[in-house]
Image 1 (cartoon, one colour):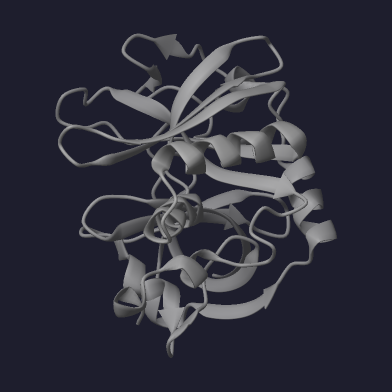
Image 2 (image 1 turned 45 degrees about the vertical axis):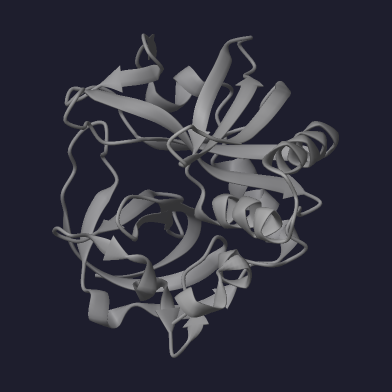
Length: 250
């Protein structure tokens, strides 16, 4: 089945892998997936140019639905047939986000969100694993380096039910943008502070998704921020590839 998707989620995973998701013409959310090792970041490019990025329209040949609640959007595809079609303008971007929005975080998943060492839902529960919200309040974005040298990207916000969340931001573009600023001499504190100001002052849409279970908590699907979008655009039209260090570009 050949399908065109508007990409809404492009997230960082481990070992150079990424996760991609978007919506078809009927606003059905689809997450194209491959067998292990999954989708590598290098596959986002075609002939040296980024082909898959948020709000690009990308054509996929979908093979078989492989739902595993709450990740009901999974769909195997043929990686040899992926084709970039076009890119949405700002008006259409906002329309897609509005059309895929929920009133609050819990409404996305339609099950109780647990809060125990982070926010999560149980493996096997929930009707979906992705959705959009407009937060009631942005409290702070934290960008910092741990004692082990690893950088963390965490967003503290309040949804329209008044529930406060601290979630990891896995948005690939957001992470590259933070790191690019640091590489250009700004401290992590400055980067975090500046982005907090942007998020407080501008219209913000957050894509909220669920991670997969992992070794320590195989039955928990932790909430994460899979996309951060602002109007006006904090990126000024740029995409993740504009912030990738040159040696890493393919």
